[in-house]
Image 1: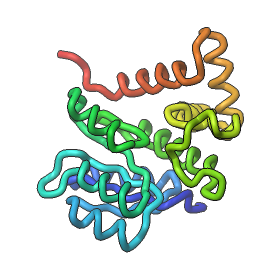
Image 2 (image 1 turned 90 degrees about the vertical axis):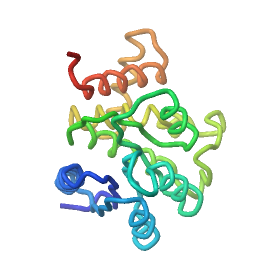
Image 3 (image 1 turned 180 degrees about the vertical axis):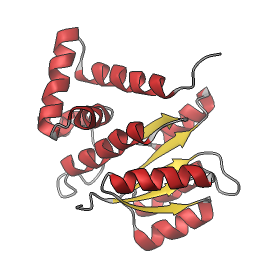
Length: 204
């Protein structure tokens, strides 16, 4: 199987690490793991992963601490996996610029599409043309602007769910948005919210 990219997974729960490592490896990614923030930073410096999946609340350095380091010193994109979705946590996630925020409990079938989308988004943004991920969308070529987050996440979900290539998944998303009278951004947000709702534990 061709390696699709290098991922660092950080979680203080060894079972979560094992599950994610196996699932992402099966999906074609090269996976490194760390069960604390200090080891995660050392591993990221040495191996330069293309994406990091970070638990938020850990002993010692938190996922937020690791994310801040990755952003500041390595320019490594990251997403958070957390059981917490309170307003303060969500605000900090947005401030740090995570490419995705997934609420636990999650299964690998929900994480792989988000990871695929993150890599699809990076592939659409060639460094020579887009040195800064925060470049305003109105300055981007149309195809690249269409793949900005969260649209890229929704495209990744459709790629995974229907075994589509990225252009076909984007076209499908555009048709869905048009049929519902929504913008591409709003339809993507709706789809991501639906996936996240499925990931939540049942109400008692």
